[in-house]
Image (cartoon, rainbow, N blue to C red; front, side):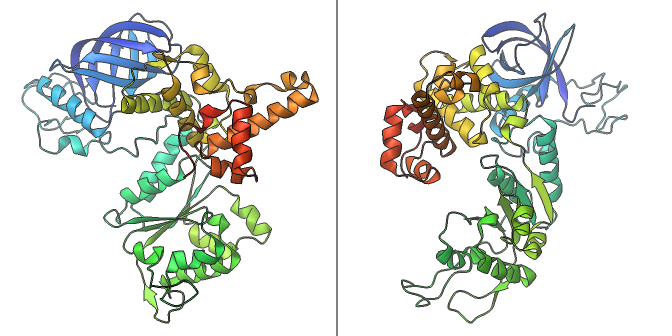
Length: 462
């Protein structure tokens, strides 16, 4: 049974898959997907770009996943419809609903005679003209436009987000860098009882140790050298909202003790202050480290771990998300192409193979970097492997490396390290230099030496 209604239509549709194109007829259409009557064979990839006119003659385009296929055609699921496009689709579909329909658009069961407010079989409401009906449909309330997932691991993440959001428990987000932990924190906050309050992030790994306590709890004027005014800390700013502790595994031991004490009753004192203050907030923390290992090495307090870990949400690496990798690449391509006004349709088959075969150590952040690069340098309607920058020396196999001399192999490995560091930092030379424990001038030299300028196109040295 469907979760959103499907309406009978008869619309001509053109769709693209990699560098193939075909046509068909949409026989039923809803907010979540459609059924297409077509003789098109097995798709070359997991997604299709659909283009069709709505019943009100307005042109519509949607990225879709092939959910199933039989001899009659394709069942597709829409992937990137934002609330504005959903509203356009809904406003064109609702007038098609007959005054005395024969079948339920949810369960396909016979409705019987007369005008009904609810289906007698599935009990779903049938008054689609009712004000606010669209906003109550689950498809209209999305997790996040950049949180795209159809694989079992990501569906489990979405399920946990919806489940833990209303419960005022601390949440621990785990996963490698670039897997979307901050977006998950935002999604939980937006669906929580504290959604009207602020979401205040603190990057525990980016703030100097000597300033981290002041950053969290604030300080009074004159409490230390340079404290020329009283500063309110992140904890106070997050009152009645959510405090997001990113890279919590980087907290120094002395601050772990103070954070543990704070989490006991949510009271604290500013640095240099004597007044005890109390706040009402929820804590979401995130880490790309193995906290259990840090505990065994004495670098993280076990009691703090249990305070933070009310429930764990683990995010999978991008390489472990199956066809989601190609779907996300296409969504990002369309999004950034629209921002630049470029007419970019899709990827070539070789580009799709390159995206699938690459191991993506920087995860989603690195994928976005390569897609942005392709949008900038791409000159045709189809994005190639070269446009993506996936023809760099880092993609060579071990056998190819073994056939090189020592000098060439060293140069290739050097280029690989610099390229991947720039990809992980979205082209930020300063951060890449820090990651490789060298200077910016060395990174600039290596970019020029190995022709890696495309990796530094997106962002500069901010």
